[in-house]
Length: 373
Image 1 (cartoon, rainbow, N blue to C red):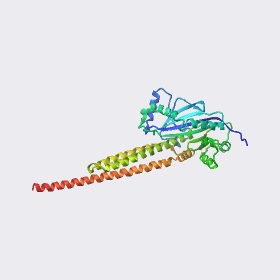
Image 2 (image 1 turned 180 degrees about the vertical axis):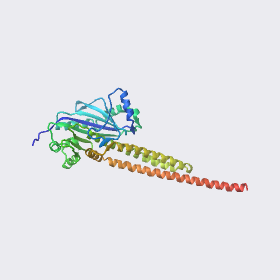
Image 3 (image 1 turned 135 degrees about the horizontal axis):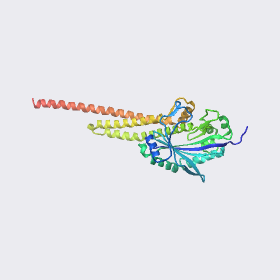
Image 4 (image 1 turned 135 degrees about the vertical axis):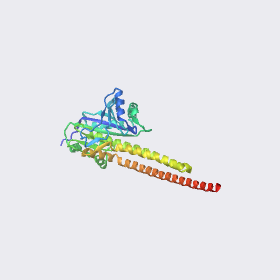
């Protein structure tokens, strides 16, 4: 058996950074703003190989090519192809694509890890912040209710279109050591850790392969389709939005308790009105979050493409989107219970006030009878 090291003839290292920049984005307005600046044309994101009826974006995102970004990696200036994808539900996904052609596999993995260090959460902050500030400056008027603080998610993909040999996925898994690329670790990992890193692997044809981890992925796609990466993109965007809603509701709960306490201390005459006003405010919050979540949940519509559906479901599970979503649901339920109780308090207060008014009227009527017989 040939054990020589494989060479990546055509490949790339793609770094993603996602930002929550608004409750929602007016994509039509954003498209107009971009064309008015006499920049390059824009396109609407679409899945290349999947039939439209099988898998499609709920609302097609806006893809825009930005000016290339130069990153100094281990003393060498590397030019990354930059782009941004705007989602209707308020997420901006930035991407830097660094070509990585004609590299031995070991060198390819080293290149990915080096890029991961320089554009990762620590060293890469200034690069990504500069890019997102540019995006916000251009599309500011298309952003609906920007948040006070932006949340972020990052992801790194090693993409290979062709090796110097045509091999099936099983042979590639035997011939390649994917662990350094997937883990970013230089020290040898235990057998259990290696098995965990390779657990989420998928193939559709004999010559393609996807291996997923929490923050990295290896994608072998001889046809050059971007569908798998688009699916991972939406999964990361869903995670980011669920984190945002969870943080938003977490910050609202103490405020809600303080408002309820203050309302309960209010004078009885004003209490029912304050209860009703607070209940309406909480109901509005729940309605807004529910509506926005609906957009996020429908960002990608999966019906018939079993392979991409499996990758998408695996990514959502791996990113623990369901756990964060469950936390959001629990907080929404607490707020629903609170505004229901507040409405009941307000109704009881109004009923007590009406009863008191009736008693007063009866007393007045009796007094008038005795005063004016």
